[in-house]
Every structure is written in C-alpha cells, then in structure tokens.
Length: 277
Image (tube, rainbow, N blue to C red; front, side, top):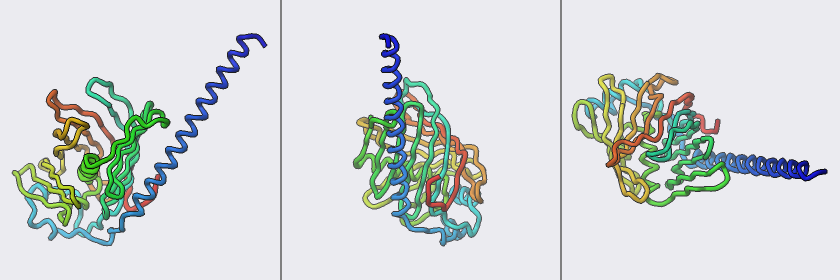
C-alpha cells in the first residue's frame, strides 16, 4: 500500500473511533437520564384522587378566580405527574445566535420535582429538581460537562422554574400549604411560594379571558446575584380536559434590556403517566 492509502485507512479508523465514542457517550447519557426520571417519580405520591372544587377559590383575587374557572372544570382531578415534549429555540448568551432545540420534561406535583432534557446540535442540557436538590448540567456533544451547577442558588432557581411551569398542570397552582395568592389589581396578583427553607414570590399577570400571560420573579443568574426573570405564556389550548399554554418564553430582564433565551412550543403533553416517553 502506498502512503495515501495508509493515510486514508488511518483517517477512516479515527473517524470510526470518534463515532463509536460519541454513540457510547450518548447511550450512557440516555441511561443516566432514565435513572433520574425513575428516581423523580419514585419520590412523589399519587394525588390524583383529590378533586378541584370551586369553593377552594372563593376567597382568591378576582383575576386568579377567573384563571382557575377558565383552565379547570369543577371536579377536576388533581394532576399528579406530567410528561411533555417540545421543540423551539435557545440561545446561550446575548450575543449568540438562536439554535434549534428539542426537549422532554417530567414533573411531579405531590412532591416538588422535575427533570428536563434539552438537545441541540452542540450540547445536551439537563435541568432538574429531584430530592429537594436543584442541578443544571450541560454536556458538550454528550461527552464533557461544561456546566455542573449545584447549591442553594440552584435549589431555589429550579423550584422557581417548577412553579412557573405549573401552568402545564394548573391544579398545582391552587392555594394550599405551599402556595398563597394575594390581590394586586384587576389584571395581576401575587403568588407566594413556601417550601421547607425556600420562599419566593411571583407577580402573575392575566388577560381578560383569565389566561396567565406572564410570571415574574427575582432569580439567581450566575455570579451576578438575583435579576428579574420572567416567563411569558401564550396560545392556550384544551388538552386532556385542561386548558394550558402551548407556547412559553423565558426572559432575563437585565440592565442592557430584555434577554430572551428560550422559546418553547409544546407538541405533546400527558398527565398521570409516571414513565418516560
């Protein structure tokens, strides 16, 4: 064999080795995600035997009453767990371009918890709150963790995400030991959340129909401390008897202006099926 033939063989062998490594890494990451989903569901009890009653909202601010009457029906069973899929766009910094993203997410309501996996052409991210611990992991090409965030800031931040995304299982927003509502005006109300040692609040905005259009709070953003963080919701649709938004956008409100970094469109959502897609 001449030099060029040997060079091509070596190159093809290297390419094959890289492909094998990537496939193995992807399978390992998927197996880890499976374990995390199983752990999430194992920690939460089934609360679907509870029923929503209009008397539960009789003393709530008018826009909050309007919301629950719009999205739930009297006698609606509580949603115990959720699984959903979405696509959309994501960006990692103000000066970066949007990239396509696909995601799947699982929630529990009996015990606060969720896990989300978002996949782009470059990285896979896993955002979670499991066993009262928040964590964000970003893996480059499923191989190397470029982000692995844990600690008190992440515990709080992931719980804030869980509360805002409760619009996809709105029985979780009903008043109780964790959530209280108070009046602001005819289009907004204050939601206060307390769980163990963590407490925070959202200013929630409603439209005239009763849909939640925005939820805003203060959330930790890396080493910069807390910054205004908000979720916008739109395009509500009735799915499995529950009215939920099918579009959501996450935004940081920074000194430089609004930084929108995630735009998701729900394409599948199921309730009370505690298993992975």
